[in-house]
Length: 126
Image (cartoon, rainbow, N blue to C red; front, side):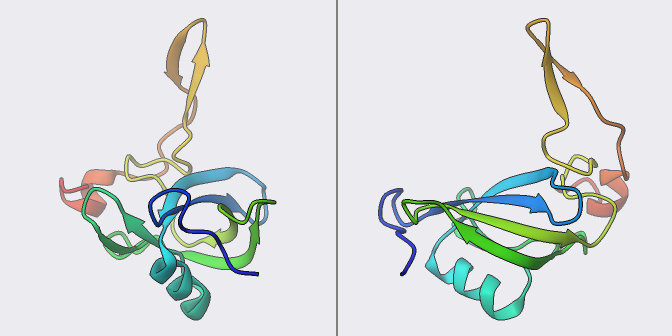
């Protein structure tokens, strides 16, 4: 079986989940090359839609994602990547997870504390 990268213009959504806790850390997109590099290297690589190039998660911050397990859905057009996160957080805004806002009473509220200072890590470039 191969993954179907054709349904979404050559990309497959990649849900990233912490292997130990089960917390969803982020959502990214992979093309065939990013998926192949992820499998070959053991570190999560995405395709950046805005920059139109491959992006090794952690290439700037050092907060890499070590692959522990990869699954696909029933249509083989999305992947779930269970990882060990190296570093204090995955989110470029300084949080453990990109899903740090929660809808409460119709308003998005920050539900987590920052895990690190993003300006110190990225030097104002995110």
